[in-house]
Length: 239
Figure 1 (cartoon, rainbow, N blue to C red):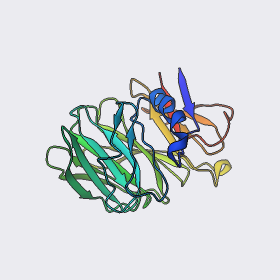
Figure 2: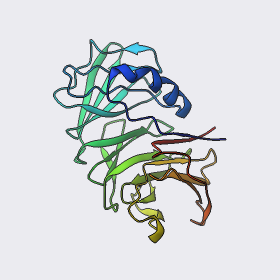
Figure 3: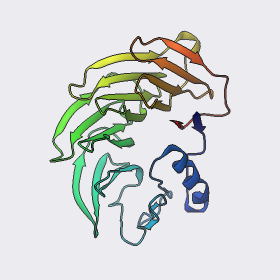
Figure 4: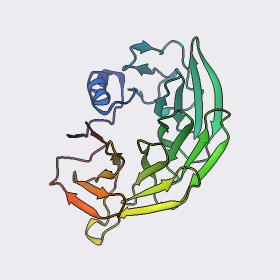
């Protein structure tokens, strides 16, 4: 089963009630980003934690977050800084200057060993979570990145961009494995959503016209394109 969501752009706490179901649908931690408020109120709805009185955004709005199985929470900010938080008790344990512009997306690899960050510069980077040492830089997109994800094995990364393309990368070396999209008929369309199937053999991408494309990863072939499902897709998940 394929799930798509187009309700992810949340601008304030008053709309938080729709974010919990959306994030549960995609199996991701939920965040609420108020506009221009200090200190930042951040609720981790999935875990039922209220961090609004404990976490301050250090002067820059938080744009994305992820969490690992070890209890660490990772936030990415408008200023391009990644902050790592421990939750027992809640405290900042590391900061990383990502040098990616405002951050768009964060992900932790399935084994917990790598952190992936994508930014508005059009570049993504990987770090080891053991010591936050940089591992690889993923360069090639010509416009901001909207999403970056690990495959189920944690060895391949997919990125999708406002340039209308998605790319597959080797997580260890940063080498490009495949490029998807960019067809003349899709000129001007963003590609803000992407996900792998459970076997890591298919990549699904969503465009700003509401269409979903299914790609075969071994060959790079386009297998199918769905009719538009509505407005711009901000999230995809396979159940």
